[in-house]
Length: 337
Image 1 (cartoon, rainbow, N blue to C red):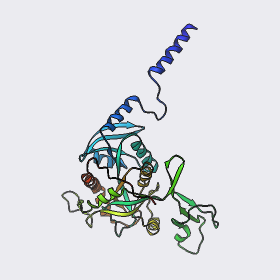
Image 2 (cartoon, rainbow, N blue to C red; image 1 turned 180 degrees about the vertical axis):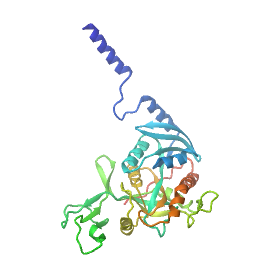
Image 3 (spheres, rainbow, N blue to C red; image 1 turned 30 degrees about the vertical axis):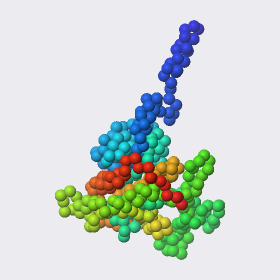
Image 4 (cartoon, rainbow, N blue to C red; image 1 turned 45 degrees about the horizontal axis):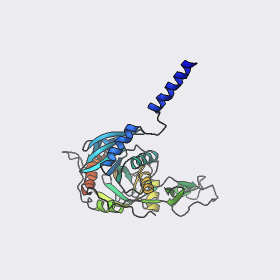
């Protein structure tokens, strides 16, 4: 019995000396490292969607990794500014989780996001262009109407997609009926939610983006006559759409453009914007246009942009960071709608 009691005492002492971490808790060593990083001052957060984007910036910056909850935050310098680079992975859940971890653990003066997107307005936003939207909507929050009936107190004013409008025979009803796009509920205060459909970029960052619209992007492959048909440009646009839908359908793309004036379409941006809205963090997104979401494109455009967009990413983000003054405290959110 005395032997068992001694074992119990030793076990309890070991728990005191080496406490077990609960789920989600960071270690004391990691907490000290994060505290040391934050003591240096605020950083810009550079959130990228995928591994290809991540490698673009790892190649041109100086970073050290810090791992938190399955995410690797690369802390260092990029173009003269303290920067934390992190890959979110695809989709809104990954994007929101990564951004929340970034803003929870680190001192961040503003979040810059970069990824790839489709154009919903090929007449203006072409393959090769870099889009910088002013507003972002999560367009996969739907109220799906019951067939031949409308019930419930859902928002009917934003946009209505009636499936029968897309029938080959317009006079035939469609059992899918209609869907109504709905706003998100954003919590900046405990249990006090605001209903928001359009999330806005930081007004000062968006104004800064105007200064880089004349920055030249490569049109042709290196030392090659294989080129995009027109010179790609960095373009500020009014609106962008995000949803966990890999959109390859021209009819739905046209619906988003017609009803919401959407210019670019992706799977992460609105989620990142929503977290930044909740945390009152400045935000700007930049997206390389690589396709037309189901609309026709020249095969040459597709093959060229696969090799060019990484250089566009480096040039466009580098240009924004060159315009950001170290220690800039003027960043603020425009009012959400």
